[in-house]
Image (cartoon, rainbow, N blue to C red; front, side):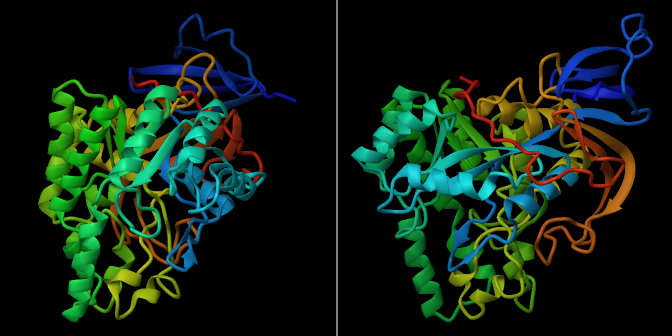
Length: 466
């Protein structure tokens, strides 16, 4: 039975607007909005009224880059679809787009079905999938067309990780050509993995085994070079391109130059590149291993270029690349050899809060916060306006956000299934209070009321940003 819900008296913030408005929800969708106290809102009645006075009413976050249960380096990401989507909800994110993985020698269909099975019936919030292409051949190129028809409309390729996910330029070009014809968006991990492997081997031979060397071998120039090469291959193919986890000023410059030419090239960055740096990788007693991810954390001076890119729209999206591994027993696999540290860090619960802190710090506006965390990822990956906004007909994925609550980020209090926080001890202002997913309360005044299995698979249309 559907419950009519009325959210009253909050400041509704979307990418397009800010207004004091009441929001009426019916059948899991936004039925109407009207200015608070207006004649239009006066006659509304509901089974449940939520008082949003003093709070922001914002769309649920869309995290377009997560890795739940990802096998990597002899272990597996520590968040399941159940624990990871629950943590997402606690952080005000109501939709994730995770990565299904094709294994070399296997079909895309096998990989996608494996991920459907992992997620089905286990998610607390809605989810969709991208497809990682590890083996580009005639068969998998044909399968791309079928997946687009099924609502899996983006495909990730890697210029890094030779022997695991790596594709050469010829394979990348073929996949891009296919994307140009079927509407699929190619996502690129842009790092020159062949050159990086040489530098890793040389560093280890010199006895440089600590986590900080992970950042030193994965050089800024090798991210910039791969970004440039990916852009040129996309131009040859006549295809749009989305570069994931951009971390370096020189890579942003490549994207900006391409966009200045009017090319359909897009970039994503992540909170770790905006708030953390090589200082963290250099923490003593192997603590730096907690911060090993790829692309790696960069020297602090790169952060200004990333914030500028977010303001000028040379970077469009902030996702987390949430891929948690516990320090004990997982990150520790790389003691004595940084190349064996599982790559990835936790963040799905922290993104919306960290970006709100960025508003307070003057980096971005409130509407831009919603744009880069909700609206644009939804548009980029064919989910808008079902997700990413508060408008009549949209899913009632809505967060009541307390902009004045203070909190200290800590592994003691987070809900991600990992034994450390990448932002341990960071004081921030702003906190999620209440979360609705398709009109159902998932977090009710800081209490989890959701359930595994509420989250549904959402088929996506093609990129709406073109």
